[in-house]
View 1 (cartoon, one colour):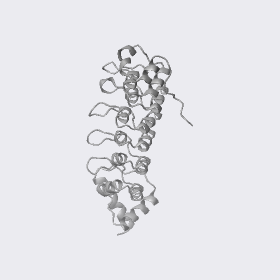
View 2: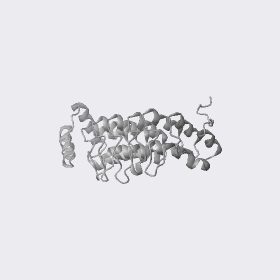
View 3: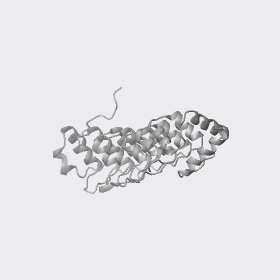
View 4: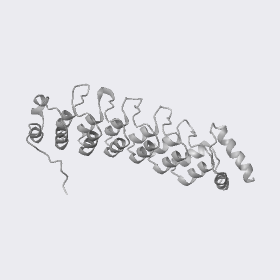
Length: 265
């Protein structure tokens, strides 16, 4: 088959599946299509997704160079979602550069960024957010924000990335939980500092009345307690739980110092 005829066949295949032609370099497109023909790889959604799932960047790039839509879904799940869910950051960047929609959703209404957060794929979260993905969309199943979900899966690195890309540090989820409440309970000093620096409200309350200071104190996180105290955490609740915390935290709450927040060299 001549290369010109192969071009028509390939674009017909893509369009038949609902794909939209993209503006591509004619010579690069022709070369890419010829290479796919030589390797006997059809330009269709099924084969495209298969290469994405196999993290086969070289072939994925051939599809894109040939003019194939980066958003073409084989079974209702966008390629960008699958790449982000698996942590294939190079594929994620490749698809985004080819025009993939950053906030395209799967059949359950979940975005690639939300999937990357759940899987602790901080590099993918960063790439998606920098391409315009919304870091504040609520998860449909439970009302969490990406920041809250990053804390729930215990991924401080992802929390820091989301803060860096300007996720809303005060946006609450169910039970009025905020990222600072969640991270104070987990006792991650670095993320607590970053949240406070980004403007997190230090005296926010969960639906049950707990504050970040209370969460940190009950969880035994002395360094986090000290950070919150220095940030102006309200100690008016101290009397109600002072007897339930460790001696070290009790000393901090009563103003007697405690854990050092200075990292050892």
